[in-house]
View 1 (spheres, rainbow, N blue to C red):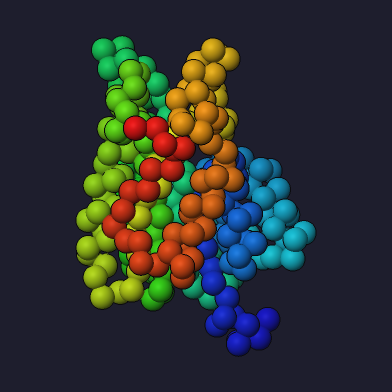
View 2 (cartoon, helix red, strand yellow):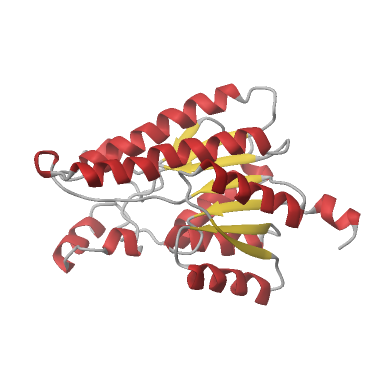
Amino acid sequence: MSTQETAATRVAIVTGGSRGIGRETVTRLAADGYAVVVGYAGNRDLAEAAVQDVTAAGGRAVAVRADVADEGQVAELFETAAREFGGVDAVVHAAGRMYLAPIAELDLAELDAMHRTNIRGTFVVARQAARTLRRGGSFIAFSTSVVGLSFPAYGAYSASKGAVEAMTMVLARELRGRDVTVNAVAPGPTATDLFLDGKDQETVARLAAQPPLERLGTPADIAEVVAFLASPAGHWVNGQVVRANGGIV
């Protein structure tokens, strides 16, 4: 690749890029011309499949295993982006963990594991993004519309995502003068494995009926919002939580 081509390439890192919303985001950003680093926690086959989909369509991508709560592994994720593609312009932090139980019954080991991924992981990735993103870049975290809906059994998960929203607001202000935007996307019920796992058909149908649009969201719905926020067209949106949920209030 020529130096001119390298300089013109926009580069995205997508954590949690092997499945669900992250996987759809990888495909969507690649379609916009991004070279994509697909971060994954454990399923190498799914991550490599995402890379193969991108390269088959004429794009460029590479898969990198990284525990988002491990600062050394996250640093290597960013170093790979710089080494392979020349820098980082967009960071989409889609990796997350969800465990549902009433507060009175929640296993504290599950609480700790969820907070390690959702809070510490977001902080570690955001810190590296703040140090690395080029001018005109974007950091996009993931919250959840459940933060405002207060569904039973979502107490610990909502608390972890409330922390993500707080970090988003602070980091947007800390990056004043850098020409870098910081936002969070807060999906409503979305048809991913993470959401569907453990729910019966009656529960899924009830949740699908809640939005005025009367369906579950899809990973593609959310990836479109992410792509907009990462694009020059979305660059005036900064320090916001975008509740992409079909109109649930």
